Image (cartoon, rainbow, N blue to C red; front, side, top):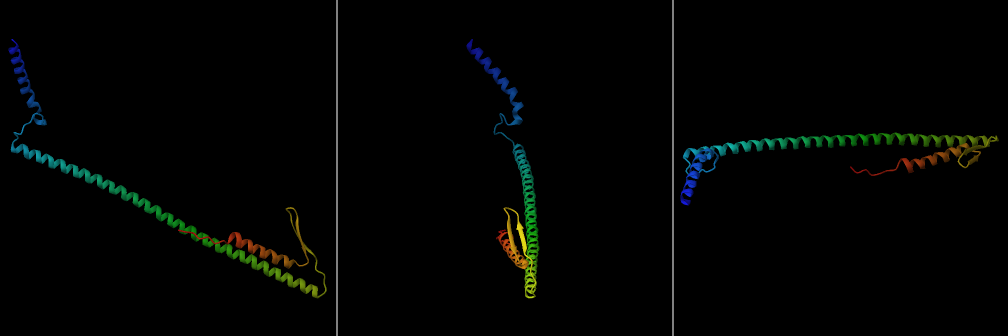
Length: 179
């Protein structure tokens, strides 16, 4: 009895395998090496098509990556050019404003010096003629500093020299700029 059951089970399993096998035949499941020549050519053609598809997808991705890199490089180059142009304009303005302040400072110093000399000469001529020169007093309020002299020209000379030294110390300092 056991043998009959075993045989019946074996036959049922064989029938089931025979029924299921054709359903998986196209999917590579249960296929054997009994392929025909047409199956091999179709298989090779399918591999060629897949390879061409992958190559075209790869080329598209590569072209996209190259284009993005080029766009990034172009944007970076534009930024570098803009920064260089801006630096050039800033240096040109710095040079122009430096020249203007240089000229103005020297006009003030030379003007003060000339006025001081003229006042000094005028006061000395008045003294030679015997006229009395009035005292000039300059007062600077911040704890009260006062300067009193008979020669206003001397005060102008001293103020011009002090102004010039302050200009040289604080305005006309030369600093090396690295680019």
